[in-house]
Length: 164
Image: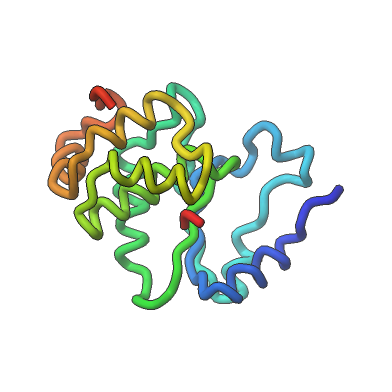
């Protein structure tokens, strides 16, 4: 059907030192069946690539829950140094990019507004909903993100304003 086999994805990951894959979509989301469905995580695991499912509903702006963001950050923190983690969702523009940005904010204390500009340069079209944009821009750095994760203020965040 023109899609790539899971083995092609495994080879692509291994060639780029990706040793962890985080899937931010549900494996049975609409639109996946027409391309042969989602991949089986076991295919990755049997090749030494750790797989983490952190499904985020693509509704109400696609802003991940506190639990989802914490889970992604923990998985990234637990990954061996020097090995890449790939974060993806169905389209690769919204949910996964937002979660990857949260990891970058926590790791490097970057402001979300600066990351928004950067990800839209390296991944044109990234951060696809106003809710995702508002959430990201409200984070002025790692301390803002940590506060929001502690008090559970993800879905209601408002403000004025592996990515590859």
